[in-house]
Length: 89
Image (cartoon, rainbow, N blue to C red; front, side, top):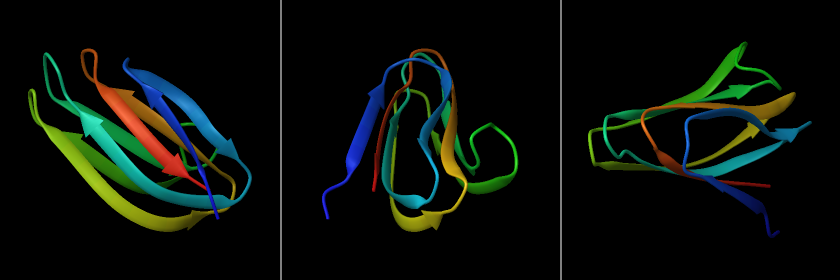
């Protein structure tokens, strides 16, 4: 099954998907400082944490997860101009 993806290059808190689904992969790149992306099984930045991914200054972090979420998938990204790509189904 083909999934969807979202790319952003700014610190953001956003619901990727409402309702059940599967978080496939995450790529996080830091720019001027370290970056962190925290994923929640929720439609807000609270509740059950699915994963936390951190990238060092000017570094990159990547994770293939293939984990299910029930309520939704919400991500909170911090850092100065980080870029993150999220793939889900």
